[in-house]
Length: 246
Image 1 (cartoon, rainbow, N blue to C red):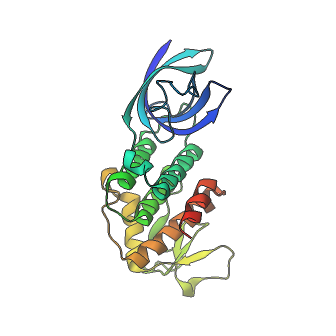
Image 2: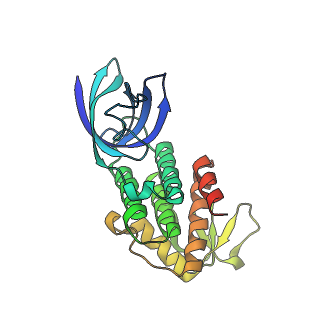
Image 3: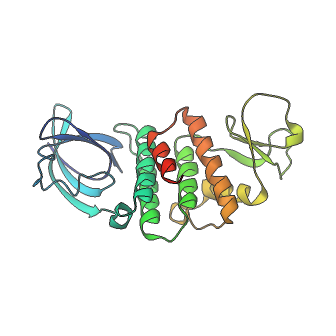
C-alpha cells in the first residue's frame, strides 16, 4: 500500500550503516516514523528532503505497520535559516517541542502550520528571535491543551493583574497572593495584551504584534517557563540555543 504525504522532518536517527529513521509531522496523520533506505550514503537522492527541518512530499510504502520512503521531493528547505547557527538551533527547538506534543496517527494540521510558519518567520521575516520564540511557545502550549486564562485576576477579578501563575496558567494580583506554592512571574499591560493576542489571533497573523525589546525578552522568558512547566520537562535543544547567546 502506497501513501503520499506532506511532512516536516522533526528528527533524524541513524538506523544502521546505510539507513536512517525519520520522525516527521504530517497534516492528516500526525507524527509518523519513516525508514529512509540508503539515506546515509553520500549520493542518496533523499538527502535534501530528509534533512532536519526540511518540508517535503513523501511517497511511502507501508508493510506491517512500518512506513518506508519510496520517493521524496523537497518543498521548502528554509535555506536562510540553515546559514545561521543560532536561528537553526532555535528552529530545532521548535521541532523538538512539536515532537513532544504531537501524537502518532492523530491529525494535527494546526501544529504543522504553526511549526512551518515559525520556521518561515525565522528564515524570511526581519523579526527578533525572541518574538518568534514567544509566539511559538505560547501557541504550542495552547495546541497542547494548556491555554491560559488571561482575563482578570483569578481571585478578585481585577482586569489589570500583575502576576502570572505558571502552574495554574492564571493571572493574579500581587495583593491577592494567599501564600500558596508555585512560581508567579510579573506581567504588565503590554505583555498581557501580547499574550491574549497570541492565544486568539488567526494563525497567519501570529507574529503581527509589537513590543519593546525589554518586554519581548520578558515575554519570551515567561512563555518558555510556562511551556516547560505545563509539559513538566526541559529541552536539550533550548539549552544549546541559549548557550549560543552567551
